[in-house]
Amino acid sequence: MTRVAAIDCGTNSIRLLVAERHGATLSDLHREMRIVRLGEGVDATGSFSADALQRTRAALVDYAGLLRGYGVDRVRMVATSATRDAANRDDFFAMTATVLGEVVPGAVAEVITGAEEAELSFNGAVGELDSAAGPFVVVDLGGGSTEVVLGEAAGGVQASFSADIGCVRMTERCLHSDPPAAAEVADARQVVRERLAEALRVVPVQQARTWVGLAGTFTTIAALAHGLPTYDPAMSPFSTPVFAPGDQTADEDPAAVTWRTWRDPLGRAIGATVDHGGAPYGTPYGRAGEHYAGEVSVHTTSFTQTLRSDVTFTVHYDDDGSGAPVDCVVASRLTVSADEQNLDVRIELDCTESGAGSERVAGRRRWSRRFDRDLA
Image 1 (cartoon, rainbow, N blue to C red):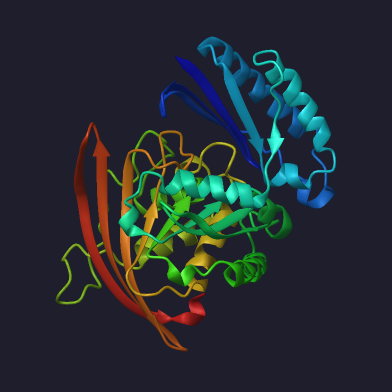
Image 2: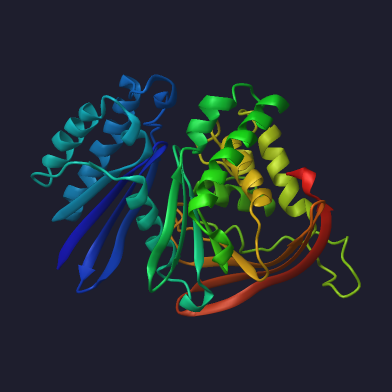
């Protein structure tokens, strides 16, 4: 019996997974996430602050205690966007070597490239999905970067791009008011459009049949859309589908969801103050100051992409909100056609709950609408 651990240290959060290895399979023993804001100020200064390093060290010390308690034999710790950019990252590496080395001799964090991060995100996202739903595009919206990845479940990554439009980075770069001023939101959207244009020149997203959204921004928006009063990572945002009757055509379900189900939560989140934009809007503690930028990025992305017919969009998450596909899936089949002035959109949404070896459809809705492309 071998016990192993993985630690993912991003720009905003640090995550721990402890698992027991049985041949080629792993059984989860412990999952945890802490908000440490390691990348706070890195976009402006180019270096980690002393406070950010201390917050990260405090969380890592706690994680090291868990590794010791579980009797972990091997640990791998990776660091991503902020560490790639920080001039004083050697201080970070030295700190991790000291803390982790007390439990597993020789253990130290390693920085991974944007391409490596994209591949790990993709493999984690599609590993439990039906391969017949591919090709997949995975969008991993993090604190310092966003990875856009195209590939097949069996064939792996075909193309990827890591863009510097994470929610922490965008907040510090563009969104300085509380709530953000209209001009700041417009600036953020323009930056997102420019970075996405770079990604789309590299990643042929039009080949995808299924889009998968990873990380806390997507799960926060899902919680908003379903009216959850507080952020509860143990609760599926889709366990109790919330239908908004009205605006349906004669052939649609009487409990049709309207465009407001998607649009209004984004507008509320972007327009809320930090004081009212935390727990009441489904945002985990420590993320309230960054959620604006994530939602601006998702809102802009949703209008920037040119989707072909029969695209499925799936949101995945696990019990700590990390985005790994474990228990529950919401899949929307989007049929999108466009001309120079309008987008015609039809959505068929299945809310599916899985667990204890069974699966059931918890809700189904259909909606269609034409709206002006200038809304982007």
